[in-house]
Image 1 (cartoon, rainbow, N blue to C red):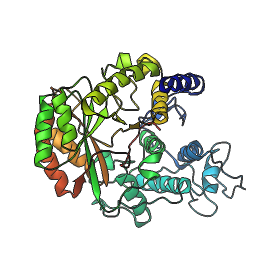
Image 2: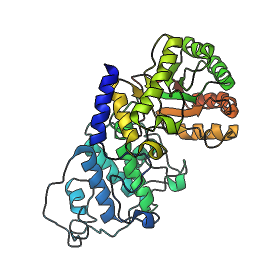
Image 3: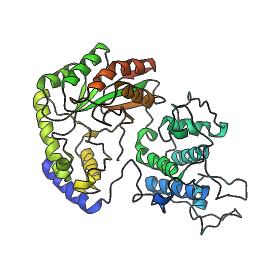
Length: 407
């Protein structure tokens, strides 16, 4: 019966789903930025930024601005058709009561304030806490501080030149960064914007992907020594003794597919579930229960799948996963240990600690396969650093935060 339901859902989705929503913005998607490729490094003005604010609001809520009389002498609706709508929705104000200044450039502070207004309108019960303690050494205007702290703490902006310590409040935004900020809000509108999770305890979820190896034994030893629970997303028919040790020492175990072969699993949604179910049966036979946690190889927003199953295959699979009762997790901190075969230990430590800075819930991506010796070596320093930052260690579960690049 379960497989029959899958086939029915799959057939329906083939007819109804259009495209795939990837975390990294590409210009054939929902905002449809005019001449994006040729203008990515251009600075964006108020008139154009309004367009993306209104499109974001419409995309998430299906809400439309109410028609109003234009109070601005310098705002021609034919040239800036979205600006008046953004004004009527309360996302942007005039530079004075009768002047809009549509050609004025937008800086990071202004963009953050405008975006936070959109988010608050989409989610009136929004809790913006969690960023109050962030201090920007390069300064931030009082009128934009809440917005900058919120956008920075949620990862919607990386600050001046991507630096962690500087916000660059007065930096004019390029089209690339402006669109990325809007796109990230849309992609992560269910996490952490819709469901604030901060309860006064900073939580970190260490996760390890791929086939268990001798490195896994070292990782388990370190986790035991530091009393740090974690989550393992397992590929292949792993050594039963390692899987049982994961279970018996209190770690969570998830399904990362049997083959981890992109060409095989992303050929179609049915091909994915065939491979996934084979891994599930193996894990159930060893563990005595069927894991319900998923991490998709490459993440839910991977674009490699386009080459095998088309642009909608991940959207289909993600939808089906929810229908079947599975919980899929992406991440909001990457160790970078997959950037090449073996990444220097100090780089991995730095990536994790910097990535967790200013977060209240951090889901950290790492790997455990035989090549990832430096990941195992980096783990003790990572755990000590995270403890010094005030984090407690938690395994993923149905009640934990759930970063999902695709919704």
